[in-house]
Length: 131
Image (cartoon, rainbow, N blue to C red; front, top):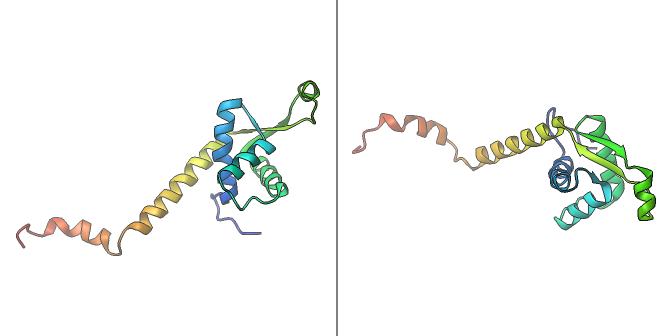
């Protein structure tokens, strides 16, 4: 298993938080199969087995990034299907998602900056425009 840098999310976890946010905004919560379907439609080739998704959801629930509850049995019975495990992103999960996006954007901006650009930008005021 890949080692996590402290305070960061695995790419799958960030995808879960991103897609889960959209699903949660629409339905109030989300469940694993709907999440897997949206991830697949988004072209996430890394998600090949539902076991991978459910392990990540369990790990994220243990970390407090999402909360999980079982839907009411009457709902599932009325629809003629098994009960669903419902997930909601916690405040801590939303904060972690936003922090990870900011970290990634910072790394991308840093990588896009030419070497020495910080030094020349800071020194440009020392030059005379006609020099």
